[in-house]
Every structure is written in structure tokens, then in C-alpha cells.
Amino acid sequence: MSFEQMKHKRTSSIGTRLTVLGAGLTLAICTLLCLGLYFGLSYSIQREVDTFLEGEISEFMLTVNEHGEDTEEIEQHLRQELGSRKRRDIGFRLLDPDGKVIVSSESDDKVAALWEFPKGWTNEPSHFVYRTVKPSGSKQPVRTCSIRVVTKTGQIATAQASYNLDRTQESLAFFRLACAIALGCGVLLSLGAGYFIAQRSLRPARTLIGAAQRINAQRLRERVPTTGSGDELDQLAVALNEMLNRIEHHVRQMQQFTADASHELRTPLAALRGNAEVALNRERSAEELREVVENSIEHYDRLARIAEDLLLLARADAGHHVLRMEKIELGGTIKRAVDLYEPLARDNGIELDFRKCTEIKFEGDKGRLRQLVGNLLDNAIRHTNAGGLISVSLDVGNEAVKLEVKDTGTGIPEEHLTRVFDRFYRVDSARSAQHGGAGLGLPICRMIAECHGGNINIFSHSGQGTSVVVTLPINGGTVQRP
Image (cartoon, rainbow, N blue to C red; front, side):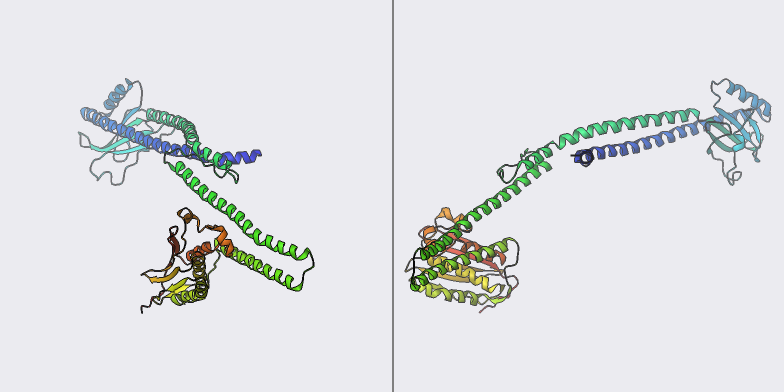
């Protein structure tokens, strides 16, 4: 196997795909979780900053109202108070209606220049307005909180507090880094865990593959192992074993069929060869040669019947249509088949009785149905002694018709009933060979019944006669009552 083939095999394996899919799904879920946490944390921090700025504005306005119009004193007080802080991250300013700075806690106030009055600011009720701006020359953005106020002296102004977001940005950056590290570790852990779980889960599948690869035509009795867990792989193993059972059955049946066919064909061929050798071993008269040829014709006829029956069964097994469907009168079709065998039954001292039945308009193959009845009657005559009775009846149901051929013959031993429909199987080989039977009559009867959508069953006891029942669906044909 080349490197490319091995690479393709690795990347196309179920274990690899499950591992990659699991890792991708884990990464997607963790990414969504981290994004949700990140935006939640960012929103929470922003709300805390806004709340903090609202409180600072209230304190700022207390200072403004305390000192009245003395802006220098207000600025001095603010800068003195803010100068005691370790971090200069807070700023205050008071703006007039034109946006000019009245009071500012910073000597170089770059934030004030970024203020823009909202539309209708002077007419709307007092409410807080929040904005995030980035002053020129500053690396971090600034959060501002503004509100329209009226000072103690009656002046309309805008009070504004600002907070430098450098620490919040650092916190969010640290959280992003932690999320990235967590995602990387999560992907690596999910790859490892996914690979382990996939390999462990697919271990029974590899066992199935190994067992299936060992099974061949010479080892058809082997089966894939089952764990008894009842999971999907165990169900697959059970299904494979059931399939192997069917395959083994058909292979054994085919092998037996081939052996039986070879044996059946060998007998007339041996007889034909013997006749030819007898005719050639010395000079023969025309009468003797004629006798040899006549004897050979019987064997040729037998070979032709076997070949025709085998071809019919083979075509049916292959799914080919072997029937010529047409609207027929079923009772009359069966009556003509019975009339054909009545002289043979009479010659053997057997009474053949056909009970007059209801006329049935039936859709089927007239020739094949006659063949079915003929095969059943031929079997009944061959296995019924003189003085016996063979009765044929046809009954009509709501959805099907039932044809029964019943005799008072020798019957079939119980151990043979399960195999009477096997090809080339004969209960009494000597008697069947004497009458030219090849063991294909009942298999053909079953094939004809099944091709018509019906079935055939046989009931018998040794020494008590045999009853063969053929059930055929009406298939929408009309039933005419007498």
C-alpha cells in the first residue's frame, strides 16, 4: 500500500472522522461559551463603571453647588482631591449650553472637546447619557457619563464625569487570553478523548471486519462474534450472521442441486451410452437397431424433460417472468387437466373424482396451472394402489381460492415432509425412477403457486394418504356464483 493510500485510509476512517468531528463540536461549543462569557463580563464591567460615574457626578455637583460661582475654587478643590489618588483615571467637567468648559478637573482636558450634545438635549428631561470615546494621544478609551443640570445659581449646564478604561481593557484582554488558552487545551483534550473513545467504541467493528474477512466459500460455517450488549454494532453482527445463514443455506442448496442434477443426468446418459455400445459391439439387424433407437428415445425424452424443468426453475430463481397472465376460467382449466389424467388413473384401477365447483374468473397462466395440477395428479397416481381414490376440489373464499388434491395412497413418512419440495428429492427413489420421476414435480408446483402469489402445503401420514393444498389469491378477479 502506497503512502497516499495509507494517508487516505487514515483520513477516511470512521475513528478519525469521529475524533475530528468531536473536536470541532467541542471547539464550537467552547467558543460560543467563551463569547457569551466575554460579552457578559464586558457588559457587567461597563454597567459597574456607569453606576460608579453616576455616583461621582452626584458628589461633583455637591462640590459645585457648595462653592457657587467661584469656578477657580471649584477646580482647585477637584484637582486637590483627585491629586491624592494613585491613579488619575477620573475626570470631571461642567459645560455650558454651548459646550464650552466652565469647570474642569484637568488643565489639559481632551475629553471635553469630544462632547456632542444629543438632539433636543436642552429640552428633554434630565437623564444620564453614556459614551465611550478615545481622546487623541491616548492608548485606551474613556467612558463618559453626562447629565443636564441646573446649578444652585440657576445656570443650565452639563455635568460630566469620565473614567479611563485602561484597567477594564486589561481585564478583558486577560480574559481573552485565558479563553484562548482554555480553547486550545479544550481542543487538545477533546482530540485525545475523542480518539480514545472512538478507538474503544470501534473495537467491536474491527472484530467484525476481521471475522468477515476470514469467511469465504470454504469457511461458510464461521460467524461474526456478538457481545450481547444489544447496541448498534451488536445488531449489525446479528444481521450479518442472519445474512450468512441465508447465504450458507443457498450455497449448500446450490451445491446439493448441482450434485443431484449431475446424478440425475448421469443415469440417462449412461443408458444412452450403453445402448450405443450394445448396438456397435456386433452386427445388428434393422429390427434390433430400431429397438435400440426406440429405447434411446425414451432416455432422450427424459433428458429433455429434466432440461426443460431445470431451465424453468432457473428462470424463476433469476426473477424472470415465467407466466403468461390472462383472464381464465379456473374451474374449466382444472377440469381439463383432470380429464387428461383420468384414463391413466382408470388403467391403474384408481377412481379419480373431481367435485364440480363454482365458476371463477381468475387471472393466471393457463398452461402453468394445468402443469401444476398434472404434476400433483401424476404423483398421486404413482403412490396410490389399485382400488384407491383421488379427489380434486376447488373452493372459493373471499380473497383466495383453494385447490386440494387428496389421495388414499401410501402417504409420506413424517421425516420426509420437510424436504419434499427440495429439488431432485424423492421419498421412494426406486419407485420414482421406475416411473421416470426426477424429483422436480413438487418444486415446480411450488414455483408456479408462488409466481401466482400463492402457496402450497402438503399434509400426509405414512399409510394414510396425502393431501396437497394450493392457495391462490383471486387478485381482483371476479367470482361468479352459480
